[in-house]
Image 1: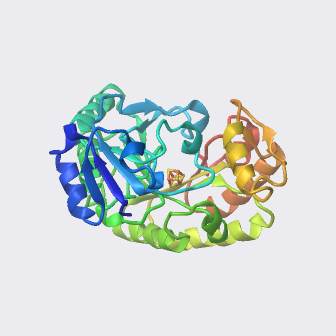
Image 2: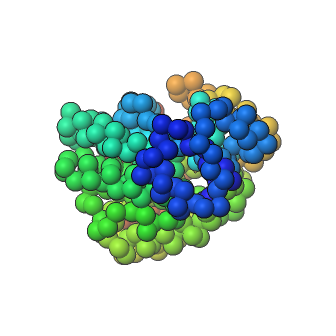
Image 3: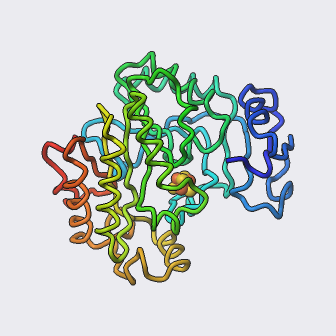
Length: 335
Ligand code: SF4
C-alpha cells in the first residue's frame, strides 16, 4: 500500500526507516514538517496519509485480560505505531485510536532496546505485533520487523505473533525464526468485501498463508471477529475448508477465534452504516466489560462450529470470551 502523502516529522527525517519508506514509496508526496496533519493535507482521507514520527517510549503494553487467549501466559502488544490503511468497519481503533491516520515510529533502535528490556524482565512473554496496526501494510517495514526478530533471537522463550491482513510475506525475516508466528486474519470472502474495505482479498490472504506454511514459518489464523450474518454457517464452513487446505504443508499452526464484540459507540457506528446484517437486526446484548456482543447461545454455537472444523489438526484458542461461551472449544484443541 502506498499512501498519497507521507508526513515525516523533522526529528526522524534522517532515520534509516524513513529513507527506506521514501525509497519504497516514491509515488507518495513526502513532506517533512511538524505541522498538524489536518492542516498539511486537509482534503486527503486519513487512511491515505502515513505519518512517520519519533517513538517516545512505552512500546510494550499489556493486552487487556479479556482479549488474552493463553491461560497462564502473559500477553502484551507492541505500540510501534497505530492504525493502518484498511477501513474495516468493525475495527476497534475507529473509536479508541488517538489519531485517525496511520502512524509508524521510525527510531527503530530505541524500540528494539525497549523490547529487549521487556523480554529480559518477562522471558515467557507472548507479544502481539499487529494488535493496533498492520505490520505488513506498507512495503518498507522489513527493517522494523527484522529488528524485532533480532531481539527475539536473544529470548528463546518469548514469542512474537505478527498478525496481518496484508500479503507481503517477503518482508518477513528468513529463515523463519523459531519463535515468530505469522497469523493471517481471515473472514469469508463475501463478508470481507463488505466489511474490510481497503484490505487484500481473502483469496490472496489464503495464498499467503499457504506460502508461509510451505516456507516453514509457524503459521496462525485469526478469525476475529467472527461475523454472524444470516447464513454464516455456509460461508464459514467454506472458509474453514480453505484454511485447512492452505495449512496442508504446515507443521505448526494455531487458530484463534473471537466473535464480534465492542463498546456501544463502535457497535452504534457499525449499525448506522449497516442496519441489520452482522448485528442480526438488533440482537446484540451487553456481554462483559461494558461491551456488546452476540447472545451467549449464538456465540457458543459459532465457536463450537468453527472449533469442530478447524481443531482437527491444530490447537484452537478463543479470545474475548471471559465466560463459558469458550468452553466448547476446550479439551485437546485448546492450549
Ligand atoms: S486491518 Fe486491522 S488494524 Fe487495519 S482497519 Fe482492519 S482491523 Fe483495523
